[in-house]
Image 1 (cartoon, helix red, strand yellow):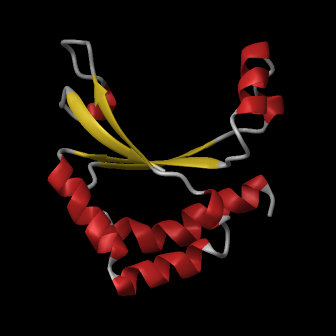
Image 2 (image 1 turned 180 degrees about the horizontal axis):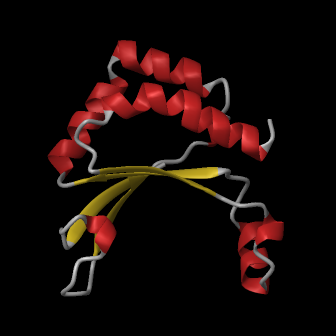
Image 3 (image 1 turned 180 degrees about the vertical axis):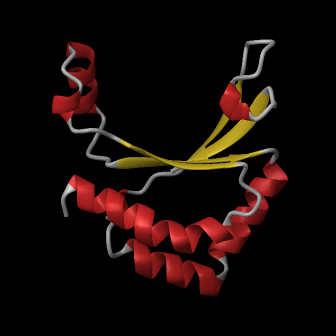
Length: 126
């Protein structure tokens, strides 16, 4: 599958399954890594050589841990998990999927526009 086919499948197919199950998420985005040729600097080339072979990072931001747990519980219910897994097997190597829980803190007194007025956010990226 080409990079563009991956992006198209994720955006046009997978998001329609996963998106509605993430009601508590205040931010749901897919960040697609660009081919190395798109970033010619030596820093970018070094990073690309050492970052693994990932095509995408998915960001889920929640206002609090309880909201994150509620969304994850809904995703992991037997019925929902089966649907998600079946779809993921069409375009992901699930053995390479990694999950991270990240707590982000803004050091600014002014919120950034993507925080929608909040100074702090929690993010689960996978």
